[in-house]
Length: 176
Image 1 (cartoon, rainbow, N blue to C red):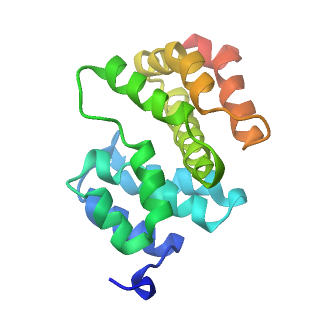
Image 2: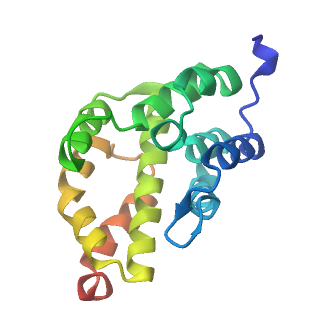
């Protein structure tokens, strides 16, 4: 494909991701609800961040390959999606540990992946709090120190991190 085939626009990424996720659900809602929530958090960080946000789970949760993402959205977006994709190994703890190692090594323009990952986690935690999913909220709470150590960079998407940190400290989050 030529460079003209790349279309790193949020609307195109949304259409691509929703088509690839198909009938997948996010709780009892279509998966697009989660993708739209992530993209909304990413709006202040620009359209490219939103593109990565829409595509963040497409290689992990569907048969879509990183190469397909690159064909449609270019090498930077594909590299960011690859960074966000859990390796298929063992249990959740093993997968997250490998992903955290990848995130801890990220720098330069690939920090776009860290912004998308923080937004994704914030949306997941918000959903747990709102929907009363105490078990998953506790999983995120236990993972938070390692996740933060791997993905946080001072000055990078601080409003997202402040809200995420606060959700674990609020009485509302603690009651579920």
